[in-house]
Image 1 (cartoon, one colour):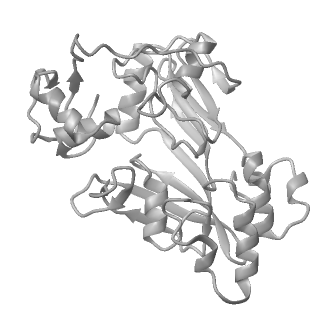
Image 2 (spheres, one colour):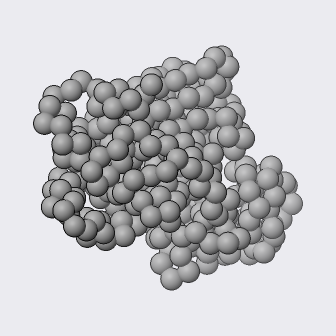
Length: 323
């Protein structure tokens, strides 16, 4: 694993492997973790470019990746990588509570060759939250994974998300560090001294109680977009964790309309819509787009007040997001 920011080793390991700080400390204590080839210490402060390697103990064998047959929307595939449009509700890699029904398991059922990472996340270059839909890169070879991971760490993979948010947004860059909530490890929050996180937010369309925004990521922290938008007072519509009260935050004559939007929003209205990167083998520039998903069309139709919206071929094209 390549480090892209200053952070304690035990915290970095816990976040990267989706394990507790106790579990990461146990691995480090057993001498199973090295930094740049030397044994690591839990409190070691990592710096950008450090290489962290985990040698999982033989007495704790890794779980087998069991196949999970499921239809998958493959946008692009060659011998080196594939780009998929992940549906909402699908966890990316095995973790407690989801050992056999993740994207990795679906790819195993498909028979897709994946780069072996040794940490239960073969082929995974970057992640999306379970209830966030959209584009992801998966590496098939070790070379592709190494080059794509380096490109991600050096901010050379461009990712743009479409989000429906409460209120009206001023175009801005949100540069606020993030860390796990001290009392709830499933939540993230803005914390001075946390991991650097930077998001660029642009208004695409303005509606009565909401905006459609484009969010471009420079970093890719856990829940980054959701936490950043909530921090500046514009949480993602339908977000059950960082939603800040949802439609109840809207007052006056706009409250009924806001409630109507909320009723037809089945999950957080966040979608990875555009992906741009240099192919790891050919070095040619690749660009992929995924339109606003069908399950979120009713909420965007309710927000816009456009009765013909549901019948349009490309919602994001129509609203100017993909221009």
